Length: 95
Image 1: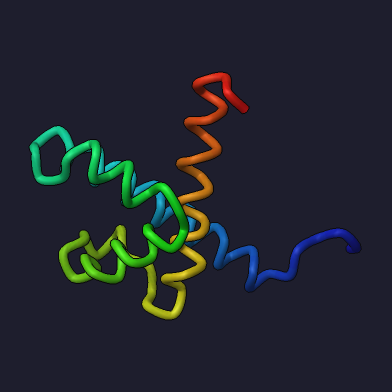
Image 2: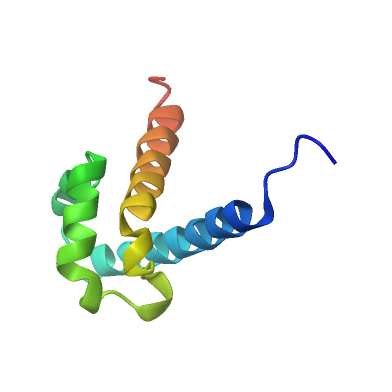
């Protein structure tokens, strides 16, 4: 069937998206509990480079289910940051 994504890239994208959702839920609890400040979370999600650096630095502190494979860290940071910036830009009506 033409037009379908190859299985492996699609499975990787789904896996990274699920991991991102779990990280987002963890981040929600961490901000609620004062472990991560909302300002710090926003700063680290401001760019893909900042997100990648933060995830790399805190990788061992993140819940196992919310950690990407090390080999997928950059792709995961790109996906996670893009999700956050596009979601909140759309929700605020500015883009």
